[in-house]
Length: 382
Image (tube, rainbow, N blue to C red; front, side, top):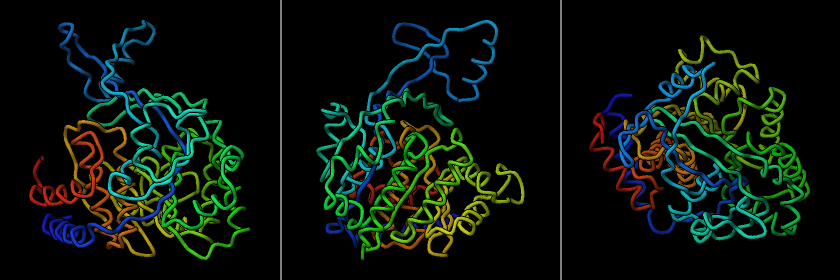
């Protein structure tokens, strides 16, 4: 994408955000996971009690581990931050920061919500915690992150535990009547397919008249079986009866889903254009929308329309764990605001770009200001 076109998209986006500020608050239901994240740096060289050089890339970390094969080694980890984690809470928090009315259903602690989530809970319109959170050690590098998860408690996330806390009227309000429903982190929730099946049966009995968006992020399905992935895709197609379903993927996830459902690409995914992958996913999956984001670009097919946008790439991010969730939040906000598809992608990139630079999600005003800053620095590091 040339810089003139990107500048034009960002100018239109800035104008739209300004025109829509102060009065566009949508009802959004998000679920179902929850994690307490510990952000960690990996030490390369220790110079003193307070001074060290960190391992900067995953490749360097991999080399360090590989050299220890047959020998053993000692690797020092430095905790930098403890924060809310899980794709659901991070995405929901980003939407709440942008002024949206959030109902969060998930694993924030039971019988009491864990203190890490208290500030997040204050930002939500409604919270129902029906399971205990997982734990993640997030090893962060300049070129990505390695998430070391402890997931046993997520087996508590079931339809029975959710519906046991909510009356049929509340279920109807939360899943049939909002403007958007987001259900994320399919991969780490063992019973998500069963939960989806039961939610579909509930909606069948309700026959809702409203047609909300449904946003789904699988979240790195590599460890799940081909059969599980295919079943999930079939369930999303069924949900198309009640929702405009949008599947969000990063490039790695798109390749894994494509392989599982038999989507043929012209060449290996590393050499295939993002445009081809996204459009092939859209044609094959037959959902209302598919969005795919890579490190520097993002693309989507929604309601038959295709767009691709160069993102707000950051060479030295302050925080990367949660960047994809902020992208998803920005994308959903753009959908609800009724922006053109290239503007939706730009807004998603802006939300993620702000987050990786500042280490927290932007409010609506900060999002507007970041779009203007991005436009004035196209082609430069900022």
